[in-house]
Image 1 (cartoon, rainbow, N blue to C red):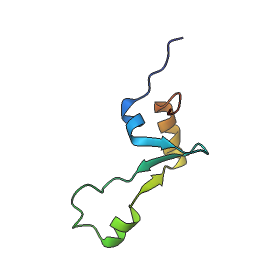
Image 2: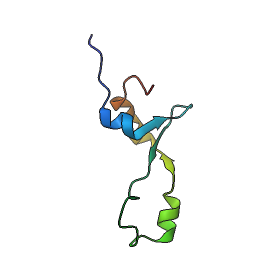
Image 3: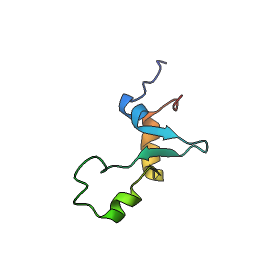
Image 4: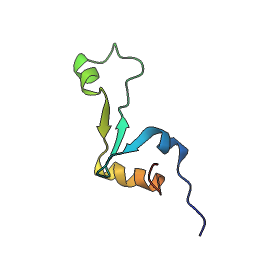
Length: 67
């Protein structure tokens, strides 16, 4: 069987935690922040852990995990 390729966009955007969960940066933080409330900006600081349904899709993009 041939080796499976990792999606190059996924390896740049996601990290896998020690427990196997996937974390990613939060969307909507690059521009147009004046129109967002301070609460929105504050809550979207840092990274988020992806939901279970998204995790299943992302792990399909990363067949061998991230090294």
